[in-house]
Amino acid sequence: MTVLAIENLNVVFATEGGDLHALRDVSFKVPEQRIVGIVGESGCGKSTLINAILGLLAENGRIASGSISFEGEDLAHLDDKAIQDLRGPRLSTVFQDPMGALNPVISVGRQMRNIQYRSDLARAEKDARSIDMLRQVRIPDAAQALKRYPHEFSGGMKQRIAIAMALMMEPALLIADEPTTALDATLEVTTIELLKDLQAEIGCSVLFISHHLGVIAELCDDVVVMYAGEVVERGSTRQVFGNPSHPYTARLLDCDPARQSERTRQLPTIPGELPDLRRRPEGCIFAARCDRRMDVCAAIPPDIEVVPGHVARCFLAESQ
Amino acid sequence: MLSYSIKRLGLAVVIVSVAMLMLFSMIYLIPGDPAAVALGPRATEAMREALRVKMGLDQPIWVQFWNFFINAWQGDLGNEVLSDRPVATVVLEQLPYTIALILGGISWSVALGIPLGCWAAVKRGSWADRLVGVLSVAVIAVPSFVVAIYALLVFAVTLQWLPAIGAGEPGDLGDQLVHLLLPSLAVGLGWVGYIARMVRASMLEVLEAQHIRTARAFGLPDRMITYRYALTIAILPTVTLLGVGIGQMLSSAVFAEIVFARPGVGKLVYDAILTRNYPLVTGTVLVTTVIFVLLNLVADLIVGALDPRVRSRF
Image (cartoon, rainbow over all chains, first blue to last red; front, side, top):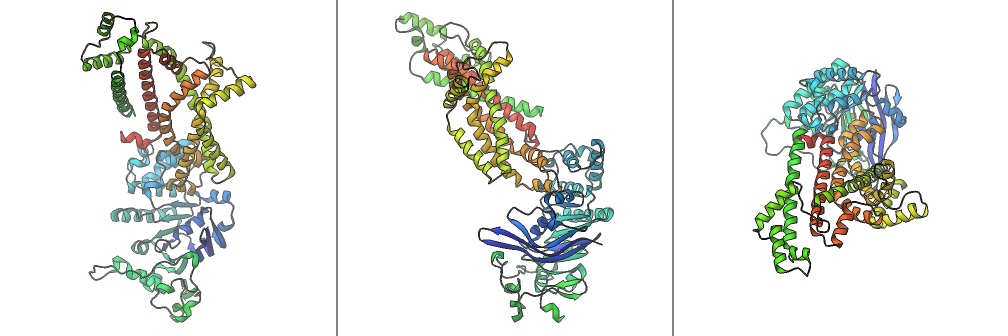
């Protein structure tokens, strides 16, 4: 069973400098109970993708074509009210910044009660569920924590509270938007372990966005590599990290500090910069920065299956 | 919350003390002999000297200030010149009328300004937003005495819906409220504009915040997001602004009380200046300062009650 299937999704923002093609022909699937990682540098369209799924695109953004099929419904063509009804109970989100993700003037208990507003449970029962959930994310003195305000917790605790809120709804899909980026390394490990445990317990799928390759490798079953609004490569984590078939993936792995075997003063980088998405170059999106560019790259490469389940949008994948 | 209140109260005492020092210095620096002014041109030098001793003007300046300071904190602001009644009694008689007027002005400005600002922010860029923007600037630009005069002409004289002058029958709360409507509108109308602008701006800022995105991601209803999650935060700068604005409302109250022939501190100070009743002027200014500081304190306590982050800082 597939929980989320995105097919040929195109998202366009109307800007003063013309239309900005933020996502082009994005396709991937999130199977049931799997953790799918999305990796890519800043500006690759990760946030736009999340907003498109949640129906929270900015006013000037629109889904130009394609489908976002979630539990059999196409979110791209659902009206606002219907998507709002899915957000929370079926589709929960943990955002990057734990400092700003909770409302500063409403107590934690009240925020957790408010997100259960659809439930018919009595107030005390809702609070009991909140306390139970806070215990699961290892917030000490959970009953007392309900009365406290977000600024009274540390960053790591706030992120755990955010995770508790998201998972309390027992969603079919949890979207985790760089949930550990703002945390220090030790907290990152514990938070990821916590997320993995809770995912197994609840049995939901997770869409995990990160630019930290180590975390993706550790946590995710599948990985989707994005570059400048396109999915350049996708497959199981083992396939993609073991046999990177798009030059961008290969370069990205080369740049991972964790993979450096020799002492160096300068970490490797990918020369060049992201293309201006208002004037998208003809042909392959990565061609300008690619060290294995060929003449055929002037045309847009198709999605080529390297092995079943492992797809790369590159002509080189064909020769493998 | 209690320790926060106590600390703020302590600060208020310091502010009032400093205000007393400044007020005393001003009186001291004003050219002219208070005794000569009080007794008039036909008094003899002996009479003036006697009054100077009676008023304590022969003492060193720091003794004079200390006496003024101690007496003022005990509620003794001296006696007024015309009737020789204690200034404190005279001012306190008039004070409830002015406080009612200020609270009425705040009620108007909050009751109209907050919904208008909210509406403009939610409908940003629409004709409603633009209309609120234009109206806000318009009411801010019109001086309160112009509002007072036109309100009087339209609602009291032409339409005859509301009474023109006075504060209403003593003891009849309904009648007093009816008499309060127009003068408090004159005091508060400009603040409708300020508050609408302020609420709109801070609402737009708060609606962009990460936690609002979180609230939307949980599918909370728009009404709950706007009024419970966003407005509670957006309102905080407005409360502080109102606290400061009370000073300006107090000066508008002078005009409103004169135009509507209402009793009150504003009318009192106006008459006191015209009759050169200096002890009364000093006393009124001091009481007004205390009212300003107290209402500011109330505004800060409201902010503290609404914002747990402020509370924890104290």
